[in-house]
Figure 1 (cartoon, helix red, strand yellow):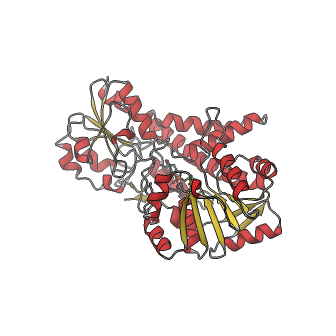
Figure 2: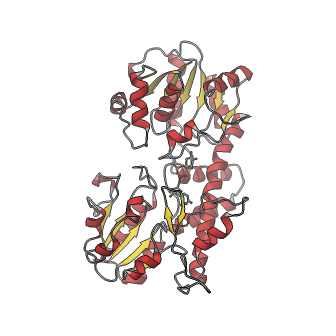
Figure 3: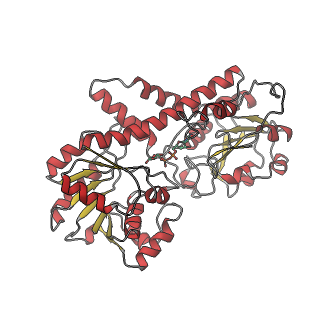
Length: 448
Ligand code: UDX
């Protein structure tokens, strides 16, 4: 099938490469000449495991070609995926300007009215009015890709949601995904859009729920790791998205829960649970500041190290991650901040006044405290014993992702603080050795 993909960001580039891999003839189009040039060399302008290698294969096979928007007079495609950004407006609603620009461009240049598959996240009800306004063949087709696992998630989706369109269009969309083994959820446009928001809002609520319980554990002397071990075995709850810490970030979760809250307010309904989810998440980012004030007193002039800037491991994306907000809060208290992240290398990513260190060791040398913001595997493998001799008292470790081993660090003389790891709890569980859990991002679960 002849397919076009408009917008070659973290969703569009993966979609274009994977559809080409599936045997379609794909034309990827973007407005940014640098991005197009980089992709033509088989190099995405962002980090996504496996994507560059896949790009090189499908480009060499001639299954994928890439063009700048302004190079195109005419577009001949049976299906066009729209995968442009819909960032938050100050009000919390989504900025649809890129979507409108893409649809306007498409209508003008399409040789035949293509089927539009909308990948961009749009509030329920938006797609219908766009379809009518631009008189499109239109199917809402939200994506559920996770950064750092996007190629995997495209190849092995849990489901494929198709909203709207007539039977012919739905059949064409199903042909596009014929190589994938996943159930189709066929519904109307608004419901397909709501599925996307409901999925992200639920995941955010699950994270804020476990963070609320972790905060209670800190006050009541219970231990969140054992709580999670004890509830996750219930198949109705399950083990995923129960990792307590400094909260969720990224380009999707914060934006989508804000948009849903905005939309509900606009329609006269108050989403109390959604508001609570957002408020708990905002609170989690303050935990390190509270812990450092408790351990160090005044933070002005103190040397603080930040480990991890990306909003999660296996990505270089820092958007709306807790780390940057924590850096800003520390700078505002007059602290001196040195940060390190294995993937985020450019100093300009940091707020004015913070320094980017070339390694974890150099960020930690001379620091009185550290805040771990991203659970990169390499941090759990650091030689904490030798690092302790390069730090200064009180050797405070705020483990924002519960990624390190509390007892091991305490034995080395660190003052360890996690999130919900029973600060006040007695060191030994009744009748047995306390287990020393750590979160393995690689394994995606707690490990002893
Ligand atoms: C998310 C959704 O998972 C994906 O389906 C959707 O298409 C886009 O948004 P992504 O933003 O890539 O994907 O990140 P995800 O892996 O979901 O994590 C989001 C944030 O939640 C990260 O900041 C992560 O640190 C945090 N998180 C995740 C927790 O704090 N605890 C958890 O247990 C899981």
